[in-house]
Length: 120
Image 1 (tube, rainbow, N blue to C red):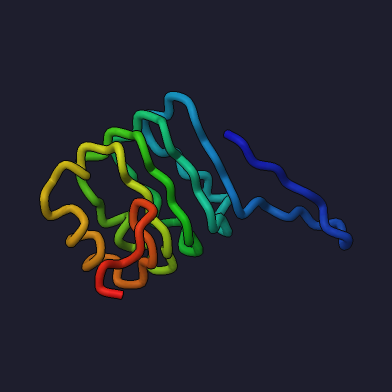
Image 2 (tube, helix red, strand yellow; image 1 turned 120 degrees about the horizontal axis):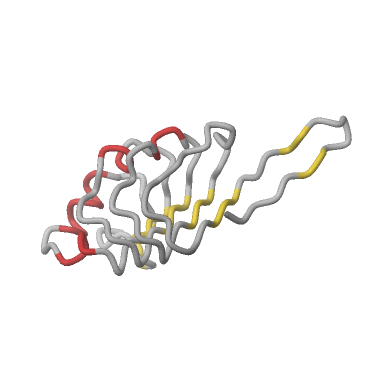
């Protein structure tokens, strides 16, 4: 896991807003002390599920490229602030209805797999 924390001038701890985890992650462990994460990069792991991701209510960017996800789960759909989602390289992308479903399930999304919404 790669992230850093820093103390603010008033001595409180500033938690990271960007997190990147690479290398063999097979299940999602959601640290509840990181609720303010806005950018999460879990690319190139072995994730089969995103169960638990709904706790990151402020998440705006989620990169899941190169995992083993076979479905878009409710935990991803629940991320109402999500603006950018990358899923390419996952089995779910092989489903013909994949892009249309994602655009419909996440109407606030601005970017899917690096491309803008086709209706804009």
